[in-house]
Length: 409
Image (cartoon, rainbow, N blue to C red; front, side):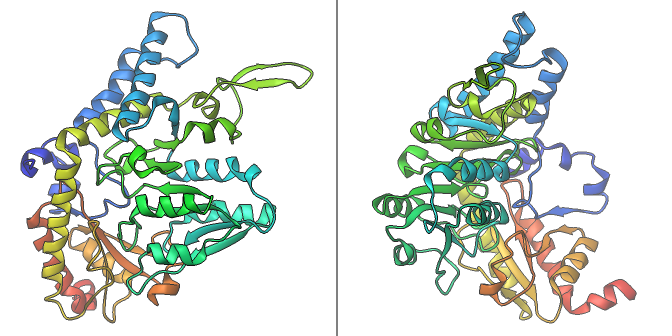
């Protein structure tokens, strides 16, 4: 197990930061985005300071260094999820990746075909499929959630049919934090003759992922949730699917030729999906971030977060007014409300006491149908959080009944 106090020294947000230290700030909004370690920042700065030029464009030493670093980053990311480099496409994040997949698979769909999702999905894994429903006339089908709000094998089987062409589900749901049995769900999907798309945004930062073992057809995730740079992400796809998908964005760097007759050709995957100047520094920084996580050990990270979650749940249960919606979830996410206090008011109160959490629908606007709540408060942990911070968080939660007193005393 890693030394958390030592790990925190890797993050400038915890060092000489008046916004953090002056207010004794506790950051529990890691499902939103994560802090960045020095090694990631330095790796990006190394590119900008030493060989800042475009990739796949120049025939000089600086350009060669940029090419080596960019494609080296691809190899590193591929290794992290046990993929081949040509199966890894750099994107700006999960949202773009899911849009690229939805539009790329459009030619496989026809009217009355079915796309399976769940009500627990993030907007990024709902709206691109809604668009296909409008464009083609295919049908969105929802996996029924069980009493806890989980997607189960039985639930998925109950909605699959010979019309099912795509199943797209989050490995870890971003509100309730349930971890799906993706390997089993993928097997069931394939037996039905459909493609399985996995939203890994809340999974890849917290657990070891092996795309070959899972056998998913696509896996997408964002760098900024993995202590990596914002504006970075990955779209993994099986190569035979990538090769048959059209690119969403066309432009320089992704074509082999085009002429005045309108004839054109694309490069092979993954390059055909990366039109224009890429976020080269971001890709290099993302690779370093994943290397950093690998050095800490993904199993260590997952185990530590589970211990934090277990401890926090045990403490919150001592506050009668706290309603916890996912106490048995495996991920380090706690979604709750304080009885009689609106979620945004509770989050504002916690913020005034130095606790950073998120309130609202968390971009999962269908889930209130299941929860029976329009908004909730979400606290989410990462490996650099401490048990002492949880104590501070719980003490702040106790003041929910004094909401007006805290602000108007």
